[in-house]
Length: 464
Image 1 (tube, helix red, strand yellow):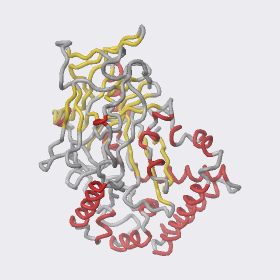
Image 2: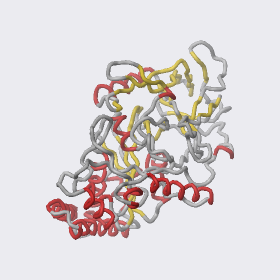
Image 3: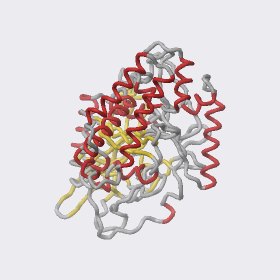
Image 4: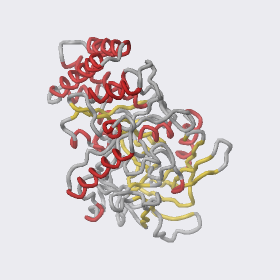
């Protein structure tokens, strides 16, 4: 992604994020009424509560099914609800949200949910710069004060009491532009504002839809979405290069082809893993992410210690097999202990001078390779004892790509209502990252390593 320094101006003070990120609820686990091993649900909840480790539950198969609209299964309570009782009453979730609201007003860090808002670091083309694009519509080049729609929080929430989205329009905004000048997006700096559109050439729009509908089919339950150009455009000129980039918005269709929502009217899942599945149709993200996370730890430990990666994997497999045969408290605790031992070991070795080179070699963190359209980026963070608390992971599905730059369509659980966790939520947004420069990577922009030093954080590309 291009770093344009000529004519740049600093972000206005009022646009910087003032303190901790908005509250977010962690993506809850989803399980059927009975787990695949035939254990009683109450026993499963009790065991999870006893060891305090949601990772163990996923590892022995409690979350093997990725729920979606029409699957026929009940969604299990979130951990906050499970701690209050197996019935998962709403009062427990409400108490959890109220606690975060108090933390925010006091200026304290909020543990949040799956996805604290990312920190954005790098420079972009600012309004007034010589390289700033021409803005226009198919009918006129007259400046439009409503050119850039973005969602913003009001009273700590992006939605009002009636569920309507808080949208703010700008006539001009700083921009991130891909190296090939064929993708662009509003750069929201360190603010809480999130972009509701991006810009792309007709070629990139066609490429995105061909991949999302052909390779993975951009699905949301039984419905599907397309990326559609509006009549607004950016005309980008840098040196001898010039490109026309059209504003892109999602359009949702029923399985029969009837339009169900366009642009800001589109409603999707609030949970990040369900949102990423809707974008990419990649199933079982929580389980796949858990396995890839601990496999990466095994590879790192295998390179940093005398014990082989295969031996570390065998430790996990043996403990997991025992817990699968008999999900007793002792076996589940033993599996949790194996996870905790490996996380603790790799955390103690983070200062090893070999660690950055290994992250590059294993394509982790800031060194994840450029994703393809339909891939998913995951950032996952667990505490030393292998517990997740109220923070576990964030997933982002890739909808467009240009060289090493790419655009994601994301969401995360973040406000009081549980009614839109799996569908009907308007808070999705677009973001652009770059793989060529580690500072522009998905990993660095979310910056969970810097914000949660007491955890072990990994970013991994889920693709192929």
